[in-house]
Amino acid sequence: MTTVNRIGIFGTSGMAREAGDIAWALGFEPFYVARDQAEVHAWCFPAPVILEQDVRHYTDMPYVIGIGEGGIRKAVAERFKYQLRFTNLIHPSATFGLAQREVIESCTGTIIAAGARLTSGISVGDFCIFNQNVTVAHDCIVGNYVHVAPGANVSGNVHLQDSCWVGAGAVINQGNLTKKLVVGSNTVVGSGAVVIDDCDPNAVYVGVPAKRIK
Ligand SMILES: CC(C)(COP(=O)(O)OP(=O)(O)OC[C@H]1O[C@@H](n2cnc3c(N)ncnc32)[C@H](O)[C@@H]1OP(=O)(O)O)[C@@H](O)C(=O)NCCC(=O)NCCS
Image (cartoon, rainbow, N blue to C red; front, side, top):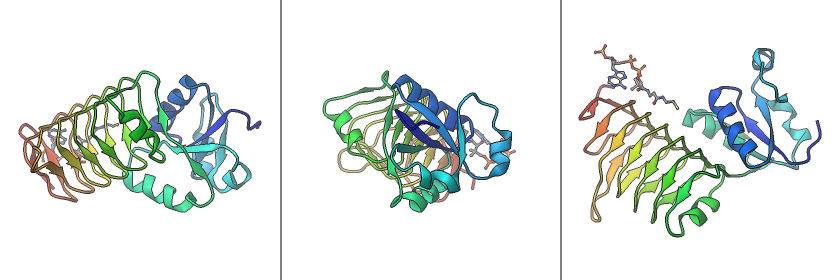
């Protein structure tokens, strides 16, 4: 495999292939990194795939982690942080408010998919995924390993703590300048939920208005 203009994408699932789509849109030729031989054998996509144990032969190119689940993304990032250079992947159709793009570019390993819109005053951690057509409004704080799934809308003054997952089409209502609305670390907000108040960490919330079910 030639290494010119390549980018390595950890994962072989749909999320990884969608990260690959962003890479193609940016002019990269993605290759994929499978966890094991079973994933390699199951691979039927017209792009190269290598085993995780072989990335040590390909250290002169950037990588992203195309794995939706924050805990797994974190484990991969921890395993390879001293060996590989992780980059951000920002689809050309993503849009940003004043000075917000610079904030994203100072992150490591954050993926912004097509049609995402982040306005301004938003702090963003590393290895986050802002999926297709999400919106994140002013003055939010987004921790590390957060995933905002397709079509979710995060209002202003919200704090998404580390490794939380906002499901597809969910809405997070706004906090305010003195008290942000907090979605706790590792919490999952179900698809289509409307969150109107703080969510505990390590929990699952669903429905309108969102209630804790786990
Ligand atoms: C919320 C979620 C994590 C729950 O998954 P789970 O822990 O496996 O829970 P279950 O499927 O066992 O469902 C538990 C209960 O919640 C209900 N429920 C599950 N998801 C729900 C949702 N999004 N909205 C409303 N109710 C929901 C189920 O009907 C079930 O109710 P019951 O106990 O009365 O039968 C999951 O359904 C979900 O919404 N995931 C996000 C999907 C998504 O956004 N994908 C995007 C990929 S990028």
